[in-house]
Image (cartoon, rainbow, N blue to C red; front, side, top):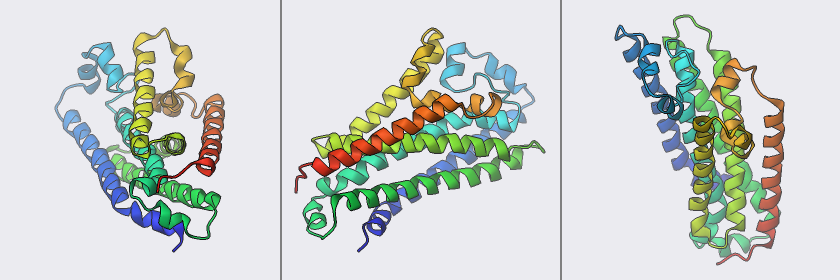
Length: 265
């Protein structure tokens, strides 16, 4: 059977769970916006009473949360975290599962080259995150427009989803490259997730410190921040180029290590 179809079926249940999770997060987040906006208090004043560090950690800093678009911009941080966790785990698992499930012998007994195998696996992962992104886009537009009170939000959400998709690609290929390079296939997912966590903590540290801004190039979470995409002129060319180089480098590493890998069967 076609490897691409096999991988799509294997990850179908997981994708459904993640999709329902992201839809719930969008709906619940904007539901909280409705509750706060109807309380009679100024939402900006409520959040401004929080310490600056808490505003940064919760993604509030720089947004007019009294508007649906501003509140969604704050919520976007959590959507990105969820999307990138899904992407990095998918990238690692789709490469290492043959060894962890002890099906590598069956797979490599087929007259298929390793390059074709890895290409099919990466295409399946790409389709998975594309579906995830499109459903997040559609659910976000539907839910946010419901509470936007005539505010134009579709174009802003679209650009945010573009940034999120690039981040998904980055972490998916980071997960895949780690899985091919990692000697222990069972540890590849945890190592990939740890890399994601470290880069996220670094992005928080940059904002909290205010003195280590030069480290932003080492964490993809700083490349496509909601406030910059929505109010800072959209995508920054330097971050787009860095992202492209990083993705291509991770793809190259994935193919090289997978071709040379001694698979435990």
